[in-house]
Length: 271
Image (cartoon, rainbow, N blue to C red; front, side, top):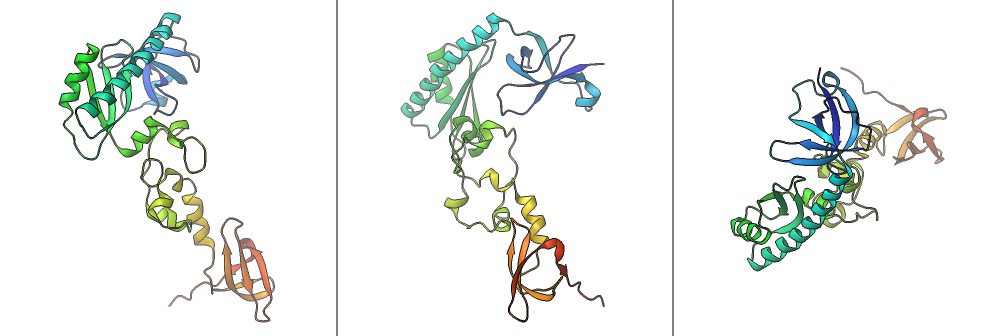
């Protein structure tokens, strides 16, 4: 039965699975893997296991060629230097050719068979002149890949409104759908400036606590609703989402804050 190992190219990339063969591959060790078009150097992020437990649908198309050697790590460093050089050339050539794009990344395949330059742009652009210019400048095969706004921010880097590195750089390995409804559920001000992240799209963190807010909002009685309490019936005047409590007013104008567990909501009569 095929053994597979989970690998990542970068820390926040999705996990890919590769045939592990008979190699012993500890966590965080580096391996050279064979892809369809090239070889890459990756880091082991999940220990080898049987295919049934990891990928029941089909065998992985990626396979481990060998454990990375000191020479492999040295080549990786050389590739990184070449990437930086190509990145600068690509930006300069894009400006020179007046192509409306933002170059955000240049990646050299580990076996140096191709250079992939990633960019963002509004709509489709004709980048064929840039490919010719880069191929001439680098003397190798160059591919261009267009990505969306969120991927541009992930590759370009930056800080969020919270003051920390963007979540998509540190740990998010995929983008989920975000909607304005998530902000409304959390009673956040609805404004383009307030809800937008570094990518210009709705912030990914709007999803992080959305389900919790949705559940507590369903449990909270509405303002003005008559509820039962240990001291008798009272009218809800404020709902405290984070504390999961409500403030109620009694007929004698007493105001108390009570946990939801002590409150009974009146059930609508069934006809």
